[in-house]
Length: 211
Length: 217
Image (cartoon, rainbow over all chains, first blue to last red; front, side, top):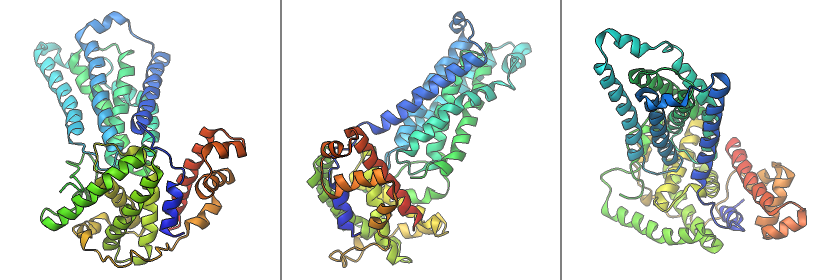
């Protein structure tokens, strides 16, 4: 087939370009992933009482998860478009992570020395990152599927961003079921869970995001 | 240089890092003018094409093909007979991905980012490392030989033949809308499928065609 014929074929009946394709695909995957994470947390662990979220630790969980989802979602959207600039979105994502760690460190400093370690480790530090990762898996699958239909020219970075977003959604779901109260606990172990999801995404990206 | 903006610090991208700088800093003034001129002429056409103007879309794709041919020819000197295959593969990708362009992006940078993605992919298939490509990336495609733009531009691999190996429903949708030029509504009336279903068949068929093209290189 001559290239002119191919162009003819592509243009014939092409109609208008789809609008908001990136937002629609990633938005659908995000909602699906969030629903799966919340439903998974409820079915698997059950929700904690709503009053708990008035406390600083549990409230921080939800705020952190939401901020991370916004920043990583923005970054994923940028990375889904060829030649789009990503500096601002990448800085925002790194900023959320950094801020969470700084807040956690300040909370650790404000905790009386004799209960610091107990607050940091809680009763579930060894499980928390794994719950966050497990609850993020449906979101990660949905987001990678969404990205596959878009045009990420940097598959590892796009996979990492999708992983962080999935991790944030997993953390949001787990926050509803997690009984830990300390801010330093959240800053350490939720962050670890989110980063684990990010690294899984970065590993999967180059393998799955072919187009 | 507006043509291919730097994509900034790598978040976690390994091998292709060096490729993000499309053109060297020491770019000449003339080449800048040529690139700006290309973008200036292409952008209004592209905006109309995105809004559904088929004639504008055809013209835009033709101009992009000329530019892509020059860009790829300079970077594929080891495989000159595969240049046209990759031009066609990139055009197909531009079409399938045109929903990922938005008005904040320069059309030429968006187009070249996709071309570079296809080129890196080809290098991987040929077992070369991306680093080797980086050294070719400092080439300036405006210096590419202009000869050949009046040739037939025959690809080594025939997409027309590949069209024969996609599913019959997809092929029918493509042939009726794109080769016989029927409207979606006419195809819908003829085949009994809904307009939305025909549209999906065309898109999936072209996507399948792009996958087949990738596999046969």
